[in-house]
Length: 284
Image (cartoon, rainbow, N blue to C red; front, top):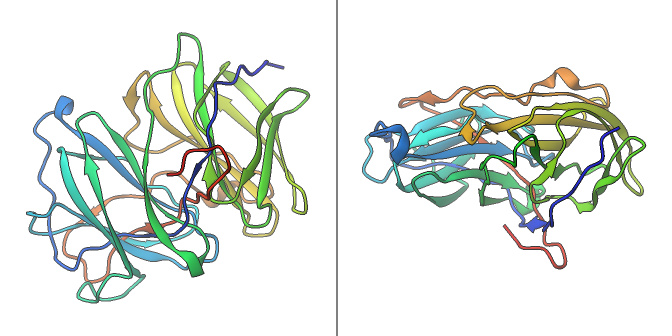
């Protein structure tokens, strides 16, 4: 079994749920070049929030990018965008695009920056959070991974390598850890927490890659773990993502959610990337 050498960790926190939407239709301009763009993706991590339509648009665009009918546990691919400020809004799935959005926020995209716009928390406390992702390459021969805690059933989560060290402890619902540098290879993980179900998961981490491990409530009960590859060798992974399941829902698919451009009557992705305030941790 590998020995994890963990980096210093802060728990990012924040409450709310992701509702992306603009009342005005707009098509995002094409990036000028690969070295003058930023990256934005969307996530729905609110367990008790129904599917939503999400809109992402530049202020001067004619039509928005639309993510229709996005449900819990979905994380989109990164969308490549020119630097600037973008409006994000969310409507109930199937609602007309002319309806006022439920929630809105704005994301300021910088050249080379990467961001996750997440719907987080329980349905009663939905809010949008913009997370700054660290997709820089790990040290030579290492991998980077963080834990995103999106399970209500196990509201305080511990993640440990089987017969090995603890990777994350006391991770509260709607929070995430910082990225940690670890040895690449196959890891057998144990997900546990007081007063909630536990689960086992096996993940494969490649050297030079960056990952987010999402812990979700399984459809049939218990927990499920989904591993998302965010970057490799310092380069953003544009599509797909490695995924693995625990607790009987491995096939639910947390991989790429296709981006749909156009004036769709009811569009798009909403989400919830949970994060709650944790003592001595930086909030989202």
